[in-house]
Length: 121
Image (cartoon, rainbow, N blue to C red; front, side, top):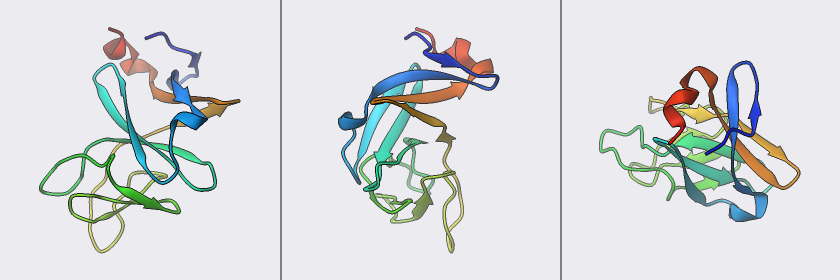
């Protein structure tokens, strides 16, 4: 896996093209040890969250459905913000959100540069 773009904080990796991601459904991508659920909204925005349910039963979130910028956790039906991974009231919790860049038709996900060494295989 080769880094595509580097900023001061994040190194961005190509994970696919816009058309690879269906609207309102999740798709799992792997960047080294990171397992990430990528979602595309009906208005074409793309978001990336850690593919791990914040609920007490665990599980993954890629099978969740989205409405607007909210993901419905498929395990416990909690609402999770796609923008920052925060669980919405009345529940609490958070999943890691990753920055996304869309350049032309290419989708890239950013990993913290200081962690970059962990993600090269």
